Image 1 (cartoon, one colour):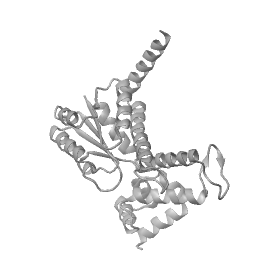
Image 2 (image 1 turned 120 degrees about the vertical axis):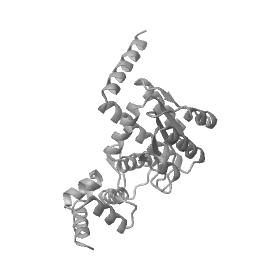
Image 3 (image 1 turned 30 degrees about the horizontal axis):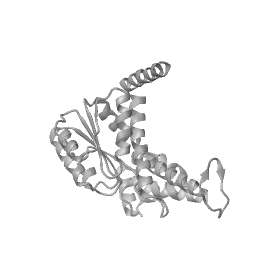
Image 4 (image 1 turned 90 degrees about the vertical axis):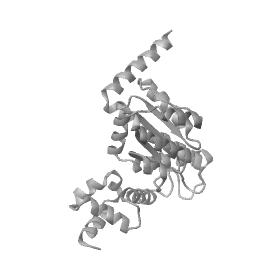
Length: 269
């Protein structure tokens, strides 16, 4: 290892439990090396980038701290068998934890800002991600954001053709390999819309066309159901964006407040 690589290795070995909260820029500043040195070090260790490296470190730390997951505030004894509900709980917990680790605050803020400033937002998905699209659309409508969210592929293609500069196109796919989402991305790019992708971290056509890339987990452990893992992770990513939007944007906070008051009035009636 070079001198800089040794510094990074020593810092990681001394502070493994803290790495998940660091960005590549933050760890570079803490160690006294350049951000590119952090990326090159991660690649030398066999990872695509620092995000992959810190996720692997975090998983290792979790495994070392506990042989089994902490469920409902109780630590299961070593070797104890998990019930189905415990297994599902752990699968969802891992999916949420993975999505949290994969997306830094800057990327979430960029996505929230793009949605907040957009005149219109179109949401589209592939596979079983439409439930995430529908839920996100309802949340955005609740704060007064005009949203297009249609399950039909032909309608999606027609809608994206009406987008203009300043609009936002959000594409959700577990793998990012969807042909029709790729077509939507290309049309949205031609229109000048800001494209946000939510895919796994593997190189894929949808993420390659996006202006802002967010990441979800598409697979869990061997006994996990991929559809549950992917949808849980994707939902958490979109909830992170929405939460960031509402917390950081004055317009979002005001609109959400009006929406909540309206709901209270409806219940009163």
